[in-house]
Structure formats: structure tokens, C-alpha cells
Length: 340
Image (tube, rainbow, N blue to C red; front, top):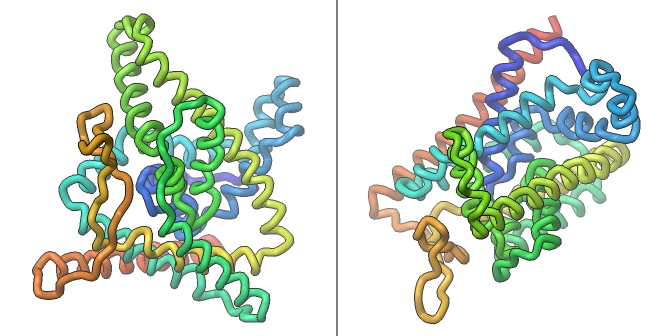
């Protein structure tokens, strides 16, 4: 799987990693879907699958170069590095856009998912009964998840570790939003807002030579939570990639059909026209660590076509579709160029 890459390939891999990381943080959008649309999904799965006993044996024997080559190190470093970096850069911009232009951001995502369905299904011509049934199952699961009610927040470290395993699934399963699953599990704000904020604040203080956080019990609690969540995510990423690698190798068409159905069914999660339902405790809005209201769920509604913002939102849906089609065209042209 490992191969020599040009500087431009490396740059675009990092950008794709940024996109995947930002997508993983947005409820309803799947990082795995981004990797599928950008054409590096299977390489991601099979590269992660290489993190196995043989890889650790190479590492134990200090054969670092062989280890790096065996796990497709350049690819993983760029994609996963971009994903991590996006949590402190691109995702902050995305948070701003969602706060001030929420309808238009969700419209763009909605359009991108419609484009993704076309992208994935355009070359899928195997419409035998088993594949159609698999697609219907995917649609039903996607719809069911989009209408589930969230649980209460739980900071038990074993549960946080489990959240890491489940939350990272969005990177390996196209259409399954890890952040939305964390909302359903009740820990989205705790793990992707509060803990990340505390980690970022701590990193800035350490950079400035300030280690006073060591005596702050609340800060240490959040750092423990983010460390356990990260450990669970790393464990889940490797385990799910091994399972998916096995499944893709044996039932590639069925898995693709389920993915098409699942992404189609999950369109309801990113439906642009929805009102936020905030979490209420003792008759008052629950606030997160930044003093903002905690989102509990979304109530969907049909758009009013007499309003100008509705047509602007529709425009952004077409922009989202067009963006995916341009990515598809770019990927096809590069593939043809590399085959010449």
C-alpha cells in the first residue's frame, strides 16, 4: 500500500485530513464519508489494519524504517495529523460559522451528502436482491439513528473510554457521524467541547511556562477525561479498521450497498431546517463551560419558500453538491493522469 508521493499529493492528503477531522466534530457529518468522497477510504482502512502484531514486533526490534513503511506511515501521518490539527484550527472556524450562519452551513453539508450519494452509487451496478436488501437495511438504520433521543452526560472513565471507541467510528464508517453518536450518548459537550477547550487552554499555559493547572482539580479531571477518550479513540480506530478490512475484503458490494443506504437514511440528521432544542435543568437552560446553552436535540420543520434565507440555503445546497462533483472530477482527472 505504501508508495512514493509527490509534494502536491502530500499537501492534498493533509488537507483531506483537515476536512475529515473537521467533519468528525460536526453532529450529522461523518469523517468516513469525507474519506469516501475524497477517494482514500479503502487506503485508510487497510493502512490502519497494518497496525498489528507484526508492526509492534518491528517497533520492538527497533526496525523503525521498516515499521514506518509497513504501516504506510506517510499516509497515516498526513491524514491523521491533519485530522488532529483541524480540531484546533479548521474546526474553530467551523464552530464560528455554525454559530453565525447555521442554516447555510447545514445546507452545504446537506448538498455535500446528496452529492456523496451520487458519487458512491454512480459506479455501483450490482443490483442483485442481497444488495438491495442491504441498502434498505442501511436506510432504516440511518433513519432510526436520526430520530433517537440523547442520554444524560456521564463522566465515568470506563464509559468515556467506550465513547472514544464509538465516537471514532465516524472516521471508519461513512455516513455514521461519531459526534452525533456522542450526542445520543450524552457526552458530546463533555468530550468535544469542554475537554478540548481545557486541553487547548492547558497547552497554551504550558507553552507560556505556566504549570499552575497541576493544582487545579477541575482541570486535571478534564485532562484525565480527554486522555481516556483519546485512548479509547485510538483503540477503536485500530479495532474497527481490522473488522472493516475483513468485511470489505469478503463482502465489498454488500458493505457498499449498506453505506449508500445508511448515508441516504442519515440525511435527516443534517436536514438544514431545524430548531435547536436546548437541555433544560430545573426549568433553566443548562450551560456548558463557556457559558453557552447545551444542545439536547433538533426539531425539524419544512422551509418557508416566501423567505429569502430559504432560497439562499437552497443555493448553498447546490454549492455543496457542486463541490462534491468537482472533487469527483478532480479525482478522476488525477487518476487518468497517474495511469498515463
